[in-house]
Amino acid sequence: MSWDTTRLNRRTFLGATAAAVGGLGAPALAQDTGDTVEFERDISTTVRRNISSFRSLQWQPYFDTLNNGAILVDTSSRALHYWSQDGGTYKLYPTSVPLTEDLTRRGRTRVVLKDPKPDWRPTPAMKKRNPEWPDYVAPGPDNPLGTRALHLSWTYYRIHGTHDTRKIGRRSSNGCIGLYNEHIEELYALAKVGTQVLLI
Image 1 (tube, rainbow, N blue to C red):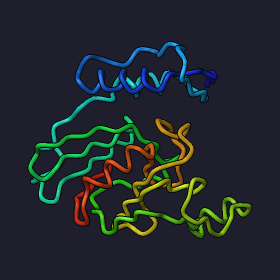
Image 2 (image 1 turned 90 degrees about the vertical axis):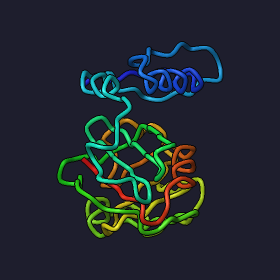
Image 3 (image 1 turned 45 degrees about the horizontal axis):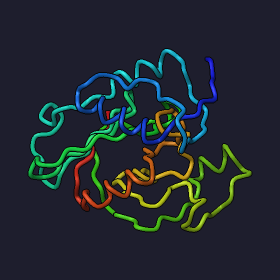
């Protein structure tokens, strides 16, 4: 695997992503034009394939109805899709996904709690793998769950923000689905307790 440190203009990246969502094809590499953010970029073939598969979808193949709205998480393309109950709102967000297959859970669940100021405790399995991790992190800028969290009916599983934006688009989580903080805040406002969720 090859790694590259790249300086990316955030506005250019978001604009390119919007173009891809609109069906105009995969985003081109951004230019270094000021107001830049530096991060590591995985330039492997896998990531290039994932970027090209970041596209809009219809809800009908995945859900019988849009009652309470619907969230589809595609762990292969590392994308989260949201449809409102009336079908009038559709959102597509890049995500982080679990590090390994054994940490990945797939199937149907639902949002059971909306947490506006998430705190974090590692699960027993996470603490066993990483004994140096703290037992608790209060809400705030260093919280691994970011600024908002949607708790799922599966124990320990959440859709949440992240303070480490390098994780988005990668296999980097211990089981949860991560979004940029600005995206989880938008999704948090749209989703409700009872929103159906499907992970594929």
